Amino acid sequence: MRAALHLLLFLVFPPLLMGVINRVKAAFAGRRGPPVLQLYFDLWKLLRKGAVYSTTTTWIFRAGPVVSLAATLVAGLLMPLGGGLPAPFAFPGDVILFAYLLATARFATVLAALDTGSSFEGMGASREVTFSALAEPALFLSIAALALARQSISWTSILSGQMAAWHLFGPAMAMLIGALVLVALAENSRIPFDDPTTHLELTMVHEVMILDHSGPDLAMILYGASLKLFLLGAIVVRLAFPFEASVPGHVALFVAGLLVYAVVMGVIESTFARLRMDRIPQILIAASVFAALAVAVILVRVNA
Image (cartoon, rainbow, N blue to C red; front, side):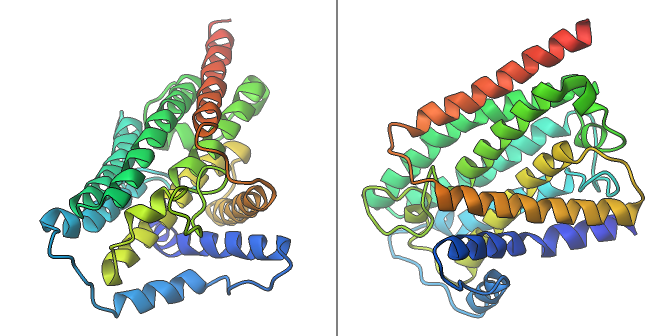
């Protein structure tokens, strides 16, 4: 029953986060904005369309969206949702596999962009890889800090059960939440790192990589992006609400936390401007510094 509820929440809920973010951004701009369920409608429409492929592309271009979505889905099976829904698959070291699965999804998208033979998409791919290389240290250091605090290298052990994190490692947890929010914004190409609605050639990053995708391929990319936002948000929500309750209480708290997470994302995107390219590495390095400081604080506390 818990496994079925985990899969239902993981597969159905993520597109809703994108809808909440867009509605928050529209409210800040004084507009009504699209419906909260707009991404569901878009995915259904794209799945019913045909895909158009350039004659210069190979099987790599067609495999990119499939591999990217598959890797993200497998990563979701390793992540417990709240404290009441354990991961369907859990083993020591799954935190490392989780990070590399997200990297595999990104790598497949980059290869598909390069396979088009377009210098424009190649430019976006190079920027995507550069920013991701700067975001990965923050993610791995955050994982290391959580593993030290919980004395485990499995997501199920780290994020499940009663977490005595805040009264033992309060400052470290606050820094980890800040670092992971920055990683989530960078990994999902959101403002202030990228603008998913831009059409300016010199500033496009992720959007330029998927310009040649259409139909079901584009649907898989958009759905995979919402899944990634959901997974990184699941870690943040669990750290922010480390409480133990019954399964219905956990699910309700987890869903409420994710909605708050989406609102915060929308507020950030509405109140910050897109950063200049030379400023993005500085912010990502700052996220790594936050995570490294959290590791140091936890080490001192554990060895005290």
